[in-house]
Image 1 (cartoon, rainbow, N blue to C red):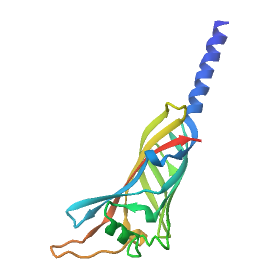
Image 2: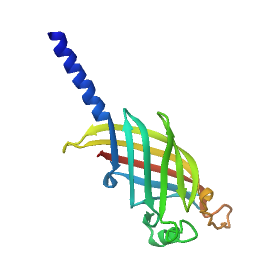
Image 3: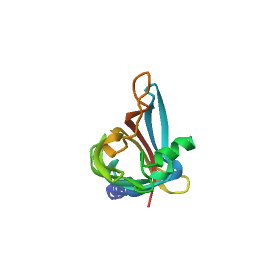
Image 4: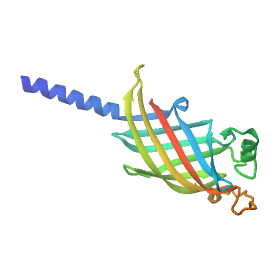
Length: 188
């Protein structure tokens, strides 16, 4: 009798923990950040982010089964209105013509995610590092998970070619862009 009760409790705990670790999540924009960093004048770094983004991902036992997300190109924000307007123009994102930037996962391992990043209608494969934050239940009974994706792209691969040479040598905008995507999702 004791064995049956113990077995039932163990099965219940295992099933409960499996249910908590397998879920489809919707990105919570109020607790997430889609950011980037790029060299300016070859001596400093400018940081920015996209303020209008969404995404969904399937997570099971700490492993991604799928992930897709998109950002509105016109939501770029570096804290300087004049610079942001230039980034929205045809010199960079051409947000009027190419409104969405998207990423779709194609494969994953424990520490790397590979996917297709599309900017200005140009799709390229990228590999990003994964830093898993875990899965918890919030005070309101919602299941949440968090993670960070980071990596680097060459902006010219996506037609973001504008630049100017500076007198002292070098250019105004670096080619390499660091991506920092900090996500918290809520299970649906």
